[in-house]
Length: 341
Image (cartoon, rainbow, N blue to C red):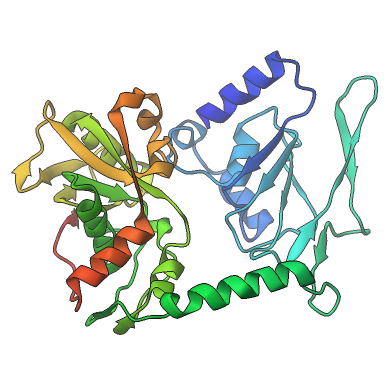
């Protein structure tokens, strides 16, 4: 939220009359319940959190006129307005099922936002039904030709798993271990980490195709290798477990942390390549370009010089495809690389 406050301040100083924020943060499923919980939160502690919701951003960062949110399947038929700063928050349902429309009313003299209108009396979302909105013929034909060209390879079996490759939003999981081990193999790094939400489905016991892996990793995130000191690596992992958050998917080491210890000092054991982490040693750490930009609480990475980053031109998805081909049949379980006390 500190970055959002700085951005608002800088934009106002540059003469911006209105600020519309596009935030991939998500609004609560129930706005009333979400706001009730929000009012009970510690603003100071929340300002240091690795992740906040769109509602929290609107409430604790003054100066945003409209917040267009996402990253949640729940749509808001009518906008939610923060009662303190009067930020107007809108959010569509997922998967392109509707269009959102809002007309902003701006005072011609003061250039201030004074209200809004919706396309109907109480709804700003327009439902897109197939019987009313037919696929565009030229684009449908173009997509069909691509499907015919690539579908055979997309559905060709490249390996087999003897265990269910399931995900978890905390600690380790077979899918997280597969992902990070694949990132290590592709990058030849010392250590790897990625966030849990980068994995979008499980793979059951049985054959694996590129289609399966593409559905798990739908994003085209490239693997980036960052040269950093052990002290920074520990700081990044500490940030991933502060304020009740549950860490990262990791590879190439072992992390033990104690939830009862204070933020910044929760990790009690950190092993990299079989040896205790050396704060002064230099490590090659693989992650994604998304996290390397400082997203998801990895803010310190945004301030490293460019020569610390090495692109691989390999996506996480392609790395996993290659790993499955080389190591099939897979029998991936939990190996104790992430331990919570």
